Length: 504
Image (tube, rainbow, N blue to C red; front, side, top):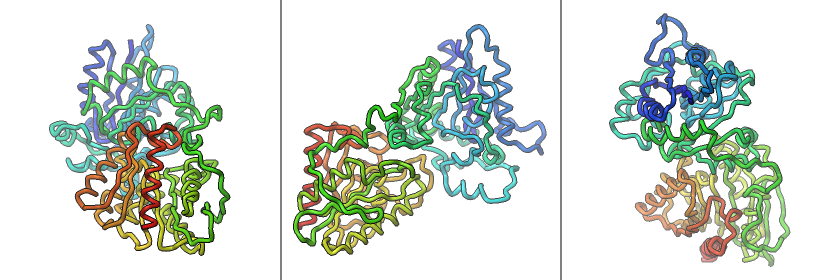
């Protein structure tokens, strides 16, 4: 028999698990929900401070109450903040816990407080002010404030009303006290349940492994499995039956396993470009490479802006990735200067400095006498999409075209507040007659595809000049994933459209 111990997230308590717990019990499992001190239960001493260690003790008490003999396995499920006390307890009862399930939660590390995982950046800054006492409590969100803590996609009006009515203040000490792990629980098998209405899915996590993000390398361990649920941050309320089925599969060791970045097989971003582009000489200055066409010029230029976030230590850096080199060499073969660059988008909080890097590179390119400064196109990829907002909001006269491939065009729900500046859906209202070429992957990740459709809807409403190039069977990063006739035709069409606007 499997014993599930369910630990709820911030502001919530055992009540959120009602329907999921009932389904698990109907399938023959034993289910315990943890009542965390201060979250609706209240400490024995009203004046006592409640911190993360208090909640770790709450989870330990439930673990210790379970008879783990007779082949009974404990699966410890932590949702949102709840994974922090769950991990703390598992670290101290490693022999009792058979699996830990991270339910739409982060990857807490030793010495890091739960506050670091709060999606709202402004709130993190406010609560992390120096000298703050770890007493008191954070009021629960108002009904319209829950999206600051996670996407409410999939929640009915009644469920949202109930979540709001039963929410309790979150003791500040639980968010501010660092998690302490000895490493004793490191060998416990782990399952991640990703809610794609709230953040990245499995494919995006695999991309982070592929580019060498050290924080993600451990997720490619064969003891780690993944599931996706197409819903928001509270699946126990939006799809409790489906969540129960996933938990049962997780307990059985099923789920998707990531491919490690072990060098045996090149990750997708390092596979050859889908077009056969002759090697061309390049000139490297600072963070910028120029691929020059034949003839003295001045020539129009296409500046290719990579996506991300890309970890700071990634090698090779993006301007040496085959797809970007291929695009730059391809346009150079058609009479335009191809430009690749590296920028400092290493985390979702880095868009401002990445924008500075891109602007500086564009200025340097325009100042080159071999470049026609009045005929420039900017081409953005993937997570570089938010950087288009500056150029859409106030297009300069010399910007003849803006192109985007499989872009993120609005902040994803789990990013928190990244500032209104980097929000292309809002900025497109000011694009005027700027030609926009959007290359859309038909098999795009759901969380990214939603931002593209939102952008296209707003662009149509505002009368923006958008040309969509569809790759129906293409995936995110299709230039190295999908070497098909369809994909090659889409690249040629997109390049042709951009070059036509430069020559107009």
